[in-house]
Structure formats: structure tokens, C-alpha cells
Image (cartoon, rainbow, N blue to C red):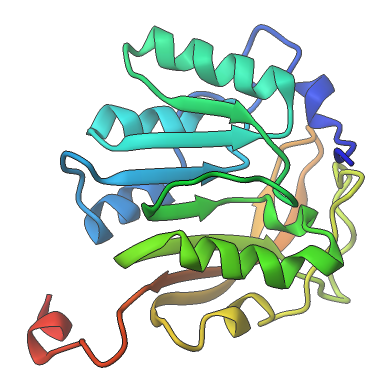
Length: 215
């Protein structure tokens, strides 16, 4: 069953709800997995496509999906405006299927839409879909008793406990583990979020060397 989300309505406008500038995380991803022919990215919950388009402009082979019809329409429009190709499609984070492997799989502000009984399966899926040496980048809003619920909190979203995200990657190399509190204006009303951020790299068993660590 498809999730209900206010973003379908928020993406109806001609303008881009989130703007057109990519998230800062994209620059870090480029350093971790430099673009080259055949290097593939999956953007889970791509919204209106600003990060997916940026990655395509760098030379990655980009796949991107979102649950909103309007979001994917605007992703395709932005790709056309920037003369890049993106495999953009409509799908739900809870039950998406794609028969591909990726060097980068990432999602920002989306995994809190996972249904409780889908979380474990989701992480098994994305880890299996990641090529050796590849990166998973995820962030999730976490519950803090001293932070009020944001005014734009969407139906279907769930706060996660601090540290839960990190627990799904004990067998991968952590490139970044972080918790940050920041100000946001997405609803037009200033508010505060707390977010856990994980960047983890996949290595085959017993293959990491001294040279790997020096990279």
C-alpha cells in the first residue's frame, strides 16, 4: 500500500520546493567514490531530483525513485533542463524492486518512512545491492525529548532512536558516524531537527589491506 505524504501536494508548484542546489553531502560522496564510466548511483526518495541531477552532471550513471508522481515528473524535467539522463521512476521505499548493483546508495530524509516490519529487509536489500568498495549513505531524524515535533512532520514519518541506524552496519567500514542538531525552515516556520548520519563502505571478507587504509 502506497504511503500517504504531503509532498505530493507540495511538489505541485512550478517552482522547486527544495530549490535546485544539491545537498552538501554530494560533494563528500564524490570524494569517497569518484565519478567514472560505469559508476552507478541510486538515490532513494529523490524528491524533485536536485541531488540526482547533480550526480548525473558529474558523470555517474544515476537511478532515482520517489513515491510522489509530481516529484518524479520534476526530476525528469530538471534532468532535461540540465541535459542529463536519469533513470527516474515511481516507487515506495518499503517495497521497491530493482535488479541492479550500485557503487553509491543513499537517501536523505526518507528512511523514517520505513514501516517497522520492513526495516530489516530494507537494509539487507541495499547492502546486497552495493558493489564491493561501494558506499551507503543514510540519515534519519531521531527522537530527542528536548526537541519539539517539527511543524512540517509528515504522515507516515517515524522518529528513530539515537544510534539505531548505525546498528545495521557492524560488518562494514564506517567512513562517518555522526549525530547533529540543526535549524530548518522547510515549513516557513523555523524549527530544529536532530539527525543521525551514517556513511559506510562495503568490503569483502578478509580483503582490506594496509594500502586500503592509506587511501
